[in-house]
View 1 (cartoon, one colour):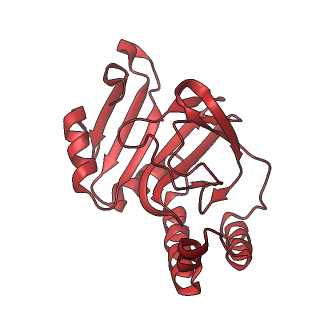
View 2: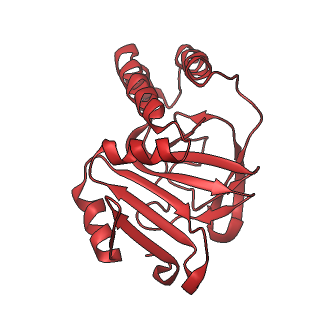
View 3: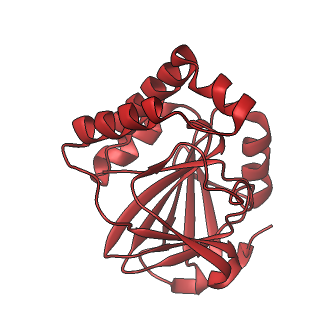
Length: 205
């Protein structure tokens, strides 16, 4: 559970209850969720969660807010297909090691679709809420989490003015949990099925 007094929930842009959102999480095999910050803190509302029943609303949110969610969905699908066909998933499940061939392909493909080369880290991942516990810097992508970090992320901090990350429940960008939108060096604790569940993560461009 999260801090419900500070969170509003919407499904297809219609306000719903926290219980309705939990039902959405339980019933949807593929989730289209954006977690963002309220433009005002009126009535103590600091966080807003937008859920969509299909990728259409998710993509439209991205278009309205200048986030390339349509392109990111295409990147996710491409990398999942590549990881499956190349044997990268099977190899990782057997050995616990991501092949250099996969990492090299992903880096080059990310640079191609994003139009930029990889940069220094822009996010800090934390093991506990409120930036507690150990932390680890993140750059553009983790197809799998660093050693000891699988299902360990409880808080994410944006190092910069703007930033968007998407977290996934399985390795290689499978089972999307939520897309998180940050502003102004913001940190966010993970709740609502997102705490201690991250197995891969990607930064939007």
